[in-house]
Image (cartoon, rainbow, N blue to C red; front, side, top):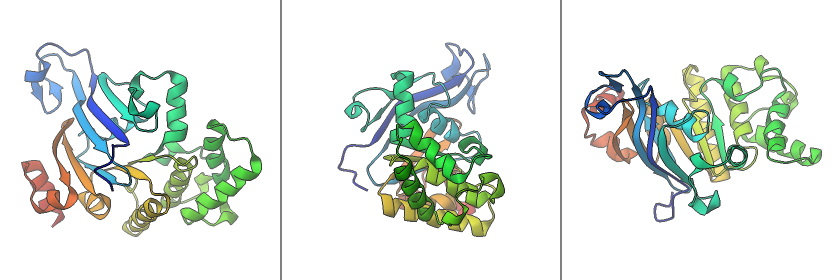
Length: 277
């Protein structure tokens, strides 16, 4: 992690609102819902930076806005307003949310990779694992079959799936293996930023441990930056260099993970840390 280097991702004032909103929203919010007009502020003025080679953890309860943030970054959701800049897109000078549809596809296929909580969102379950990975490369313009096969083998090896199973469909795999195929697909085109959204939720504890260990190995092997979302502070403690705590669509606390764990300032973070002890 190199905090002295320019960030690879900078998000400014991201807001995602469901409903038209009203002039009194900001003063009438109960949790993240306006008591006057009923608008829901899923993300409310979110600002963050991700630096080269770091894992930035985002922790919070269900409904805190974590997944909305991730899906907004990957263009799965439309935003209300805000800006985000990627170092690898227009040298960090253009707001990615104002990019054309073709440029957004390029960003999804070349600069960022996404691993969803539910593998059904990230994989074609009827296709083979190899075809899922190749699909990502084809979307980025790759046409060399030999090069794609070589890359598929490399990636499946990186996520510890036997290449003898590369022609099997993910529907035949366990949840943990499906997540590993998702990770390999997300890495297909050497992205600089990997988005991981609750990737261990619903997995058995032993499988969770294997997936978390795999994420550490992936970071070490590929030197990739990771934005890691979880409701589980134990996962964040194990992996994240820095941590952001979200509640009701807002960032309520941020800092080095060790600082957050040892000296939490917000009452909600204190509750999270207490539940971990």
